[in-house]
Length: 261
Image (tube, rainbow, N blue to C red; front, side, top):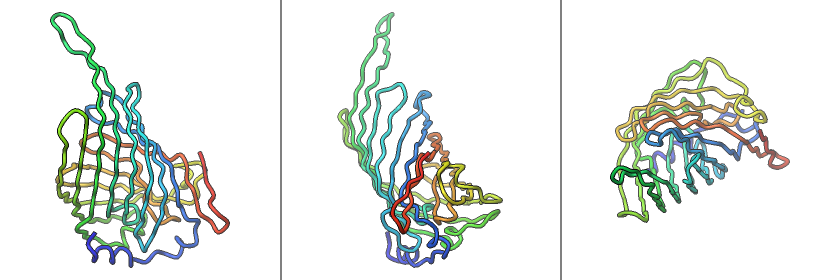
C-alpha cells in the first residue's frame, strides 16, 4: 500500500464510543454461494476470523475457511489475511486456497451414455493491493442514518493457479471501482444477525461499478459499537454470496467472552 494512503487511514481518529464498547475480536460465519455455472448447487463456506491488529481505522484480519458443495465431492480449504479500512474498503488481501474436485459427467458414446469421472487438485493464491483511494475517511467510517456517500478505488489484483490437469496460470489486472453507498433510516439490534450479539447495527447498501470483476451490489452491516462493517450479501455477474453469522467473540477487561447462536 502506498505510504500516503497508509498514513491517511492509520491517522484517522476513532470515536470515543468505539473505545468504551467491548471489542469485537472474533467472528465465525457461513457463506452460501450461488454461483453461475454451478448447475444449481450451493457452495457452503465456513469462515473463522480474528482481528489481530488495529491502527486508526485500519483493521487486520486473519483466519481460515472451509468450503464444500452439496451433493458433490468438491472441497476447498483456505488461509487468508486482509487489511481493510473499517471493514469497508479492501486495502490489502492475500489468500492461499487448496481445491479438490471429484465429479462424474455423462458423455455420449454411440447410442448410449457413459459416466466419466473427473478429478482435479489445484492450489490458488489471490493477492489484492490498494493503489489509489478517493473518498472521505471520516464519512465512510462513521456513517449516519439516511445518508449517501461515495468513494473510488484502484486496486491491483494478482491470481496464480497450479493444477494437476493443465498449465499454470498467473494473471495481474488493475481494478477501478466507483462506489455509492446509502445507509438505512435507523439502527437495529445486532441480535437480528446473531441472538447472542451485542450492540446495534445500521444496514448499508452499496452499488459498485468496476471494470474487471463486475461487482454490482453489496449489503453490509455497520456495527455501531465496534465501529466496523461486516458483509451480508454480495451480488455480481458470477452470482450471489449471502453471509450469516454463527458466533461473535468479544475482548473485555476480564478476558474474552463469546456469544454463540
